[in-house]
Image 1 (cartoon, rainbow, N blue to C red):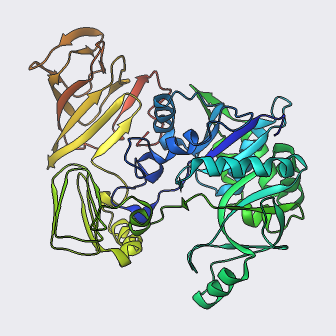
Image 2: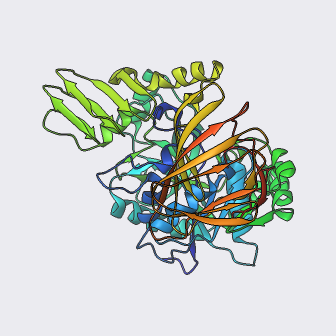
Image 3: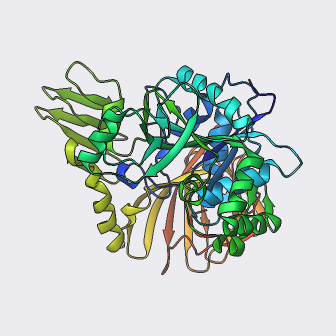
Length: 482
């Protein structure tokens, strides 16, 4: 047991394109409920499985600034108040993320143990995972950098490997080397040797120990991160890193920057039903299946189908007499793939990105700090959206240069401000927002306000917003989509 506080560092970056069309840049896989039968997302499960660890403190979360309100809301839903939500202005891989977390954790003189975790992993046996973390604490207290190596179950060629300098044991042993993704014959040799584990990307170390090794092996990373924190800015419950300083940080993984070079590295084997859920077939592998080998999620009917992953987010999906398929239905895309080729969906996303297709990055439903909106339909010079505003929430006071809006309330009661005048608009009532009008939509009630918005004008982009007041710290200079 460690007398030090144990601070989880949850890395929330990544877009998970191999789980497209569900996982997309605006709402990636870690924010979806993908594992188990409950409603908890992968991020929420990452935090929840830690309950019971000795000395557990509030988590530090590192996320893309575009996802900050999603992260905050998902933590609120499970009753967790983070020690901090640190906002990266752009992705710079795991070494800068770990450096930022360690610097923040020691900002007031503390030196906690840091448990670095990815937000998008599945671990079936939470109790065994906690026991393994406990087994690594003494080594971490002794300034070792502990990495959790997954005991291989197959000669996988899609993972990096860690070779232990000694036979694997129930306590951390020194690391001999890291090995990049091997070919199959090499992976088969690794599997039989008994000294190799998969590189999970999960770590346990003292904050001071990882900072010392970053200073020794990757000083340019540490220097840029110190600068980004020195010029950071508070944004509600978030800490926004200074953009220019962070942009100058090398884009490098903590494995490459430190773990492959340090003489303090140690590997601790983990057998707890781990998966990085890197594809739809991996989800099928880890999920509980019915008697026909199917995984069924959402509004799905299966008849005479076997070994399929069938998922519906909206419409009814029927699998009739099919085998070994992945079928995923979302608001704007239906994916049908052979289960053995599910990982190739990443190439499809690349094609869509090259074509400029919106489906590559965003769903029709876009989340905002006040609620969400769904794109319903659009034409030349007009589009229709369904807007949902949470109780007590409010959009910014704003104005549009190029579009007018017509709002029809279909549920609840909205407070509408137009050029300084306020009016209540109830169900089956409507109001008109002319071009150039300063306006704000609020929900003073106890249930969500839902309305249909009809926009018309020569330009309908989301960047046609001039914000005058906003409780969420946004401005017209805030990047589109946040």
